[in-house]
Image (cartoon, rainbow, N blue to C red):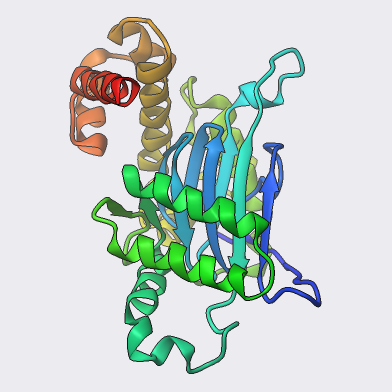
Length: 296
């Protein structure tokens, strides 16, 4: 499974890059790069792929992606519909681990930053109040000049390192070894799966999309991702169910069928396996958290 190598450039006056994206289609494909990526979603929702992790992303999420770890944020279809006024707002920072010199991270004072970057090799997601604190730092970084840019970046990485709400994303066993001939294959599989997960995708169908035989497809997908295609598709469907539980006022059985499941018992079982909660509890906890934030 080969993601695309993305080549990033820095200017003569900056040793690392920071930008603000307000469109949902910047680098909207499965890719990787030698730079570490720190991304904050102020606005936007969709499906997040990091290594072998598949889950929803939403406004307020902050993610640190390590060097060469493949990733892809696919915004929901609503962001691409012309008649709908849905906008993205994303801050993205790219930097190499040694841009401040080969010995900088080995200083005893920088042990926390070094540990944070080591953890980022599997991708880490930060939630809760700490993500909001880091957003303030990133806003300062967008405006900063000269050495203050580096100071703000160090502060953001230090805050991540002290956060008690960190979720490691990709598994330890994720395979980083890619074949050059597979560059477009993974994008085709992902795009087709995201567009058709509400239907029953047959093995012959997805193998045809990947331009390989059904038997070869099973071996190919499992060897590259450590999971079967059915597992992957189930994660996408549960991610959509989470979205509907949060955003739509419809009953659980309708959410089940809208997410591509044929029966409620199967939906309930897979939802609990992946999220650790029942659909009803997931929705209830989200509503309680929303009320707390609104009253704060």
